[in-house]
Structures are given as structure tokens and as C-alpha cells.
Image 1 (cartoon, rainbow, N blue to C red):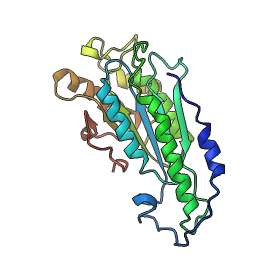
Image 2: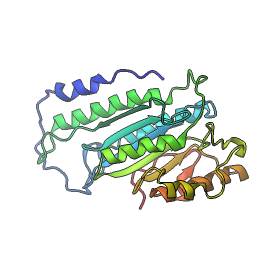
Image 3: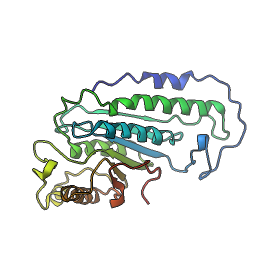
Amino acid sequence: MVMRHFGALSLLLGAVTLAGCGTQKGNAAGGEGEGGVVKRSTPQLVVFVYDRSTSISDHQLELARQLTNDRIRKLDHGDRIAAHQLLQLSLEEPPQRWSETVPQREFTEQAMMRDSITRTRFLRDAQDYLVAFTDTTDRGMIDGTDILSTLHDVSADLRAAPGREATLYIFSDMLQSNRTIDMEGLRKMPPPGWVQHEEDNGTLPDLTGLCVYVIGARVDTEHSQRVKEFWEEYFEATGAQFESRNYTLRPVELPEHPCT
């Protein structure tokens, strides 16, 4: 997948020259901030992972784009965004990934117009950039779906952004499909004890504290329930926070707050 150059965001951070016209004191933690965003005492890390394989329908990718845009609009100053396209076969591939931090306020004691403008423009540009991750065209060359390897890259996002409440949104049917594991039709499921074996060998990613939401996975068949059970065991072993109700096919909106 070819990504558009994102230099516009860097230019934006130094290009906003409108004079601040607000004098209102900044909102206390827990109050309402710019654009109705609830102001938090702890910044967030929001990670989006996208499955563009041909097993994902166009309308699911379009839903992913809509849900992503809605979620991005709720980010505040200091929050960090990361995005990944699922690896196809292994960690040896060059990743398609991107991450940036919503610019901090220039004025911490007052709500200033220039801070609001900088945030709004940044988030709008981020939405435009992430369109490439939900592109419905040119997917015929995708050769696999390696969720397990991609989660190692997500673990790196966590290490790079400590001190944040971290949430992962995976837009995928959760059917791992590479040379060693193929969950499509349960063709080559991991054997019993696979997760424990990987944990004992220290080969699982550290996802401690990460709140996980899955969007795009079915739960209405015996096969889909088997797949879900694997991921429940897997996320528990990695230290992630994962609840059965957060494994869905077509949610109306993405939950904004991390798991509690």
C-alpha cells in the first residue's frame, strides 16, 4: 500500500499564527474541553489496526473508516495515535505503520483559540491520512493475514508511549492466515496448549494494560466461537484487557474510554 506524504502535519504545527483570543481558564480534569471532548488527567494512546485482506468486505472497510474518523475527533492535546495495516506473513516484512501525537497546548493556563485551531487541523489531517488504511482498492496482492506478528508492533507502540491509557481497535475478522496458522474454516488452528507454550518461551508480545476492542469478527457460528476462544486465551496471556462483549461485528460507535 502506498502512503501519502504526511509532512503537512509537521508544517502545520509551526504555521498556525492566528492570535489567541480566549482568556477562559483551562478546564479541570474531568471537565469538558474543546469541541465537547472530555478533558482527562491522563493522556491516551489510541492504536488502530486494519485488515485489508480480501476476506474483508468493502462495506466493513468503509465502516472502519467512519468509526476511525468519529474516534479521532474525540482526541485531545497530548493524545497519541498509531495505525497499522496488518502484516501479511511475518515480522520480517517492512510494516505499513504511522504514529503521531496531537500537539500539546501552547498555553496551559488558558483556553486559547490558536490551540483549538492547531488541534482541529491536526485531527482533520490525521483522518485524511488514515484513509489509505481503509482503501478498498488494490487488495488482490495481499497474501496473508498475520495478526500475531502485528501485535508485536503494537507492543512497541506501548513501549514508546508510556504513561498513557492505551486502547487498541482491531478492524479484522480475526482469522489469522499465514504459513503456520490458518483459521479460515479452522483449516490449521493452533494446537491445544499453543498459547501456554509461547508464553513459557517468552515469545508473546507484552500488551500489559492494553484495552482491546475487535471490530469485524463474527460470533454466530461454531467456527467463529472457536476463533474467539483462542483470542480470549491469547489476550489474557499477553496481559491485555479484553472482554467478550468487546468482540463485535458491526458496532454503531467505538467506545471512547479504556476498559474498566
